[in-house]
Length: 157
Ligand code: 4NP
Image (spheres, rainbow, N blue to C red):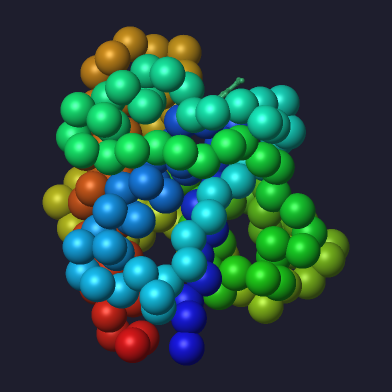
């Protein structure tokens, strides 16, 4: 059995590609790469075809994560393809919840921050218009939540 997880933010150039990169690193380290398939997407197509934001890639690289994904917009098909649709903030969650209402789904819609154990936050804050600190904070939250998500994946296998 393979668990399919897609991380979703607004533009798919900052938070969700970083979540994918951090989670892939943890999945590989756990030897679960054959059991878990990861992807990421945005709720808007504005940055479709772009690499992750250079600030996000640089901050991630300093922590040992290589962000390779190319931005794309979430599709109706994704709703049925993935077991877990993991959103970064409340707007992403609400946008996808209304998509699901209209189109139906088979995957479970979940908030990323529900997997955090050390950060008492309800959203992964959008770093796009802020400074370097914002990108570091995103990675702090992502590392925390990906540990929690990895534990959930382990329970499934
Ligand atoms: P992300 O960040 O949703 O984490 O990829 C953003 C990327 C682009 C924009 C906003 C947030 N934008 O307004 O273009």
